[in-house]
Image (cartoon, rainbow, N blue to C red; front, side):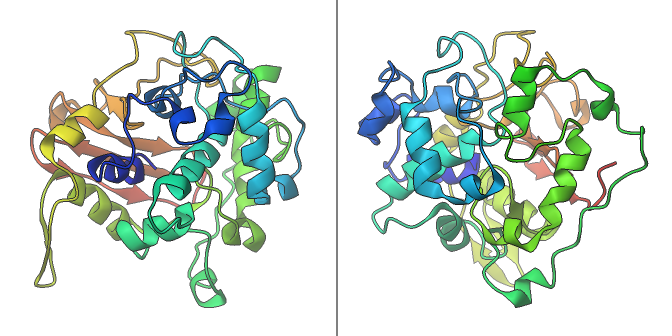
Length: 297
């Protein structure tokens, strides 16, 4: 998602420092007119869930979800704290891209057209569906995340306020084996791809790529990537929706790693997703490591 937004910034369609309402006027409701794009991407907008209790079918209704978010009152003063917007960030970013894209494509179509045609947000047909590896539930009581206490605030954020009603995150993930959840466009929740495609996208953020005799040009200017990966999370600030963990995000939505991948240098970014993907990228060494897994372990 951060890569898609960075490409829009590169093209001059979006600005990290611009208010979201500049592109989406309805979003200004309930005193949200000063929320910046960077606030949304760095999980500082105060919108980790909507107050309305939801069902899975609600999450498939793009107009309903974006309308609820446009009218939602922030759960904290935007910019003063951060908390992982597990599901909501996808609708906000997807709506923005749809609005500023000259072709007004959906988020899933934009990603396939502009980033990589093997990265699916919304599986298009049965042929692709047949290739999707099912997520595998790990053994009971072996997931440390499941053992952590989950208060109501965290539960609402991680379950999209009841749409995926499981108190144990690893079990919530297994629900994503359903074909209907593969077919829907849920930008923050159901990206489906392989390690090669994932690596290709991020490689193109940091340089040119030669693959099978074909050369592809880097997607971003150096200064665009520098802004996207600039740390905007105060040191040690706890994540309000992820159990108080000291997660760190850049201006453009990338997760910033300081100690986890020291061998790759100090300027390392990427994303570690709950649904088993990992992608540390080193600007210093022009290197990356992409991995995917179908296990919740």
